[in-house]
Length: 123
Image 1 (spheres, helix red, strand yellow):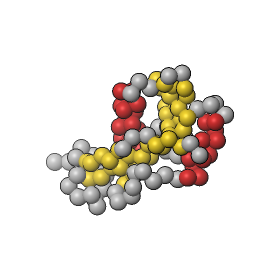
Image 2: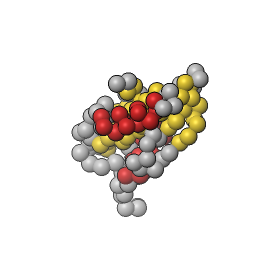
Image 3: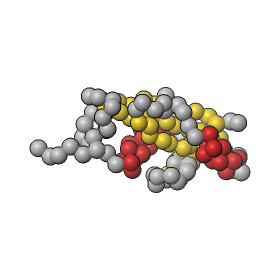
């Protein structure tokens, strides 16, 4: 049996992006640009109903709240999006180990997802 391996920061980020990306696709968003590099924002630039959308995705470890976001970062992204008349959203994806939420998420093991959808940044 192989040794259990904790997911890396990049793998957790990619997992969160996949969860959000599938929802965006199902909701009819057209992907214009995708950036999966850590700390490069936004992760998604999408088009829906002829409106541009900038979406920042973050994986959030338990016990942090996936609805909480970095106000300064999101304002910076919103200021950039405003130049393109784009809407700005935050997508926080809570990821935790299914057996014990205090343990990390491991490769090929079950995990819990706490994703409650896009949060529009309109301030």
